[in-house]
Length: 138
Image 1 (cartoon, rainbow, N blue to C red):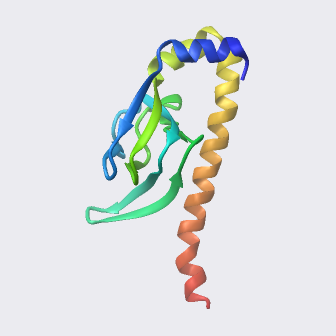
Image 2 (image 1 turned 60 degrees about the vertical axis):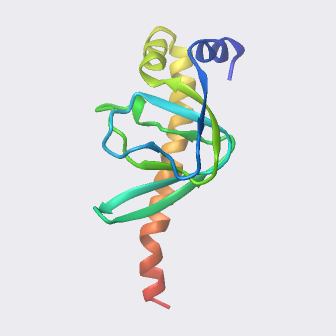
């Protein structure tokens, strides 16, 4: 990413930490932030019922947590729970959206990166959903 874009993003960023088993994001909540994971692991889950969640993916250092801040209607699509202690950089998604409107180069860069994240999440969900079918066919 261009140095100017990184400078814009860094202006309002801050460090965040989470304890193991702490909920970071809750499905259905307002999507107004995202994180760049520096250390630790985060589990993405989707609630299929009140007592049952499907584990979709484990994220680690270098991964982006949260993309729903960029795509209306701005509600979180998954739960995210710290599996280990986590250190991350926190970004205000609403502020970053405004920056993207002002700076289309930044917006385009972020849209490419977020699109890649969405595709990885969809592939993880597809693998998770197809696993029971593969197990039945063995």
